[in-house]
Length: 321
Ligand code: NAD
Image 1 (cartoon, rainbow, N blue to C red):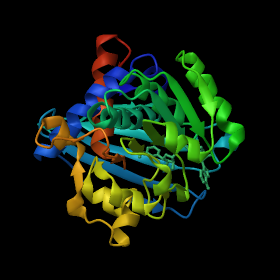
Image 2: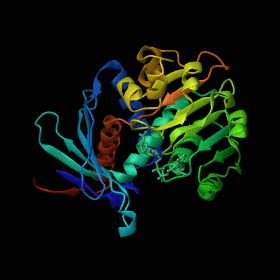
Image 3: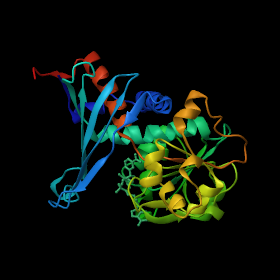
Image 4: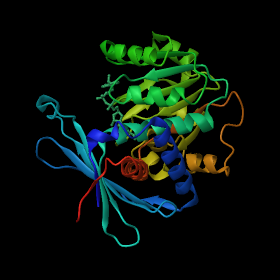
């Protein structure tokens, strides 16, 4: 088996490689060739930790395995990242373990790749202003992946904790784009594409604040109870997702579904747009909303790519197991 430690992932995986891996697996999910297994997530009653597994199988790429890990709130005080994850890949022909891969950076890259895939396939081609809601760890990965998809000329941002907005300003500067901190009315009025990536449990952006033609990628809501946008916005928008079962249970769509505003049948898998079986955006005034819940197959896809790159570059460690 191969070991690809967390420390080498940064030198191997690019946003582009992550994008390709995630776009391909979303397409495979829409044909039924790739599927996720039920997610396990438990409060383990120790160290306040949440721990679980996300797993699946892609019959096209033969990626089989799981991402295991979770959230340890006390880690920061120990100089460690609170979110911890590791990917284990198996040989689909034999069941033997094939690789152990650090999953922390990969999680940020695959999450950013998902919203970037949605921007590629759903945003207006003339999108120029990127709006960011959220300025935490994931936000800069989101921004870097998004700007590759359209000719963005400006980034505007809002965050619940305004003191964190310098992170977005620094990232925009690194990308050569002007940044402006704005209120939510301006963000909704001016942004052509909006990415939300927060840990909010209440709607931040309201339906009335969003203008026709906007594409939204709601990426923060990955748990029951979390919410980033007003449920009415999902009734007004054309809603897309990575996986419908997750969208209605733990994604942004959970609230609109619970309120009876939309049903599961109103939500389209993004893979159908990638495969061309769904047209995606129909006109320049349509509001499109991608509910990115985060699926195990994304983790397996980027981990498999990281193993290939690590082997090519001689940095994968081979272990007789
Ligand atoms: P982080 O802790 O670094 O940042 C949290 C962000 O949420 C900050 O912008 C913070 O200001 C904001 N926030 C905190 N409390 C808030 C509140 N009450 N109202 C509004 N905003 C609030 O987290 P991160 O690593 O950047 O992750 C952000 C979110 O993305 C988390 O909820 C995480 O679970 C989720 N996530 C989703 C996926 C996916 O695949 N969909 C993958 C990874 C992370």
